[in-house]
Amino acid sequence: MEKIALKLTFKRGVHPAGNKNIAKDIPLSEFPTPSVVSIPLSQHIGAPAAPAVQVGDHVSVGTLIGRSSGFVSANVYSSVSGTVKEFITKRTAIGTKANHVVIENDGLYQESFLTPLTDLTAESVKARVAEAGIVGMGGATFPTHVKLSPRTPVDVLIINAAECEPYITCDYRLCLEKTKEIFEGIKAMMVALGVKEAYIGVEDNKPEAIRALSVFATQDIRVVPLITKYPQGAEKQLIYSITQRVVPEGALPADVGAVVDNVHTAYAIYEAVFLGKPSFMRAMTVSGKGCAKPGNFWVRNGVTYQDVASYCELLPETEKVISGGPMMGFAQSDLLPSTGKGTSSLLFLTKEEVAEGDKPISACINCASCASHCPMRLMPMFIERAVDAEDAAAAKKLHAMSCLECGCCAYVCPARRPLVTSMRRAKKMIKEKGV
Ligand code: SF4
Ligand code: SF4
Image 1: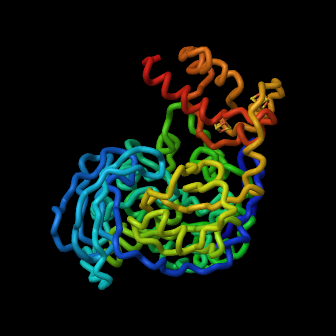
Image 2: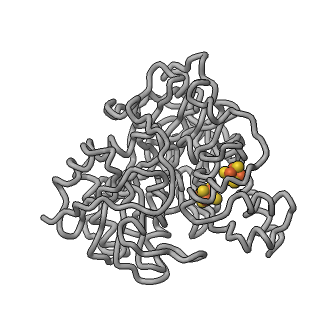
Image 3: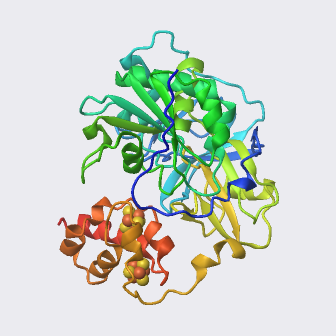
């Protein structure tokens, strides 16, 4: 068994405080599901799923309640058994509105799963991944069957277990607690892609995870310790760190022969292929000094953030609630959204934890710190000026479309400029003006 000993990395990036100690040693346990869940029919990038049930229908855990409405879309399954009460439209964690199926939970958790696969072929695995509604579970929520069907042949699968966002530890717990299953999922993915090589990238601040995964490593599936640096888990940075291949601007990982998927996605594929279990539940971290009971939980889709806050004992000192990590996550104005396939964490942060980010915004002092830390080698300060001048052509010329929205620039900016917001505005402007 050969293991890669080198610790690899990418250029630039930042080193935010990890704050993983709050939850990292708390094993995964099942979150108590409330008596009512509201499950979003849009838990993925792409077209929302179309309702597959009606008010009054009885559903089991694993009943299809939302049917994929296109190639880039995903099926949605019930996470409880019970009765469909109504359909509602409400805000999701990323700020968009979505149709939700409200189900009264009968507390019985009667299951109705798919038949496990016995004959693994590229087509059968891809079809199962699509049928099970699996999406990128690192938070990107891109339908996984699309990723497993690249337009050009690929030769390497990269599994992202970097978990580079501060606070989040659910992937770490999965690596420790579901190690064998993750490898089975990876093997199924390799069949789907027709590749003979896979790498699992883990940051070196998780030596226990590296050790656990290394027990199952083979010549074909290797564990790669990566230098701890944000955003190590971004696709292009991970591909560069592990293979030194550079994904050109506007190209996809498959264009350089690689497919990248999150380690939780590999676990979800294991469950779908070998247990017939569709995607309706995920591992999630609840952390931050603003809650009394942080932890790592198996959370069924459709639990509201209010339910999570109540169980984890939200403290009055909480200043900010973030869905996802502090670097790329979404600040919440209320606790109405429901958990879904992409909800990797919910953070309750105190004033002390967000103090830096709350300093007042001042004028740019041209220090170039944002540019010198940008992993995509962009010039955020100039893109911001182009946005303010509504000059889409200039923003395009400055490669704003390559921005990862990783937040490194805003993190280091001494003037606290809202640079990520400017990058998002730049992309929107370029698209709207058709530049
Ligand atoms: S410009 Fe984009 S890619 Fe560069 S640091 Fe800022 S958010 Fe990240
Ligand atoms: S880091 Fe902030 S202050 Fe410095 S150049 Fe960039 S935008 Fe201006």
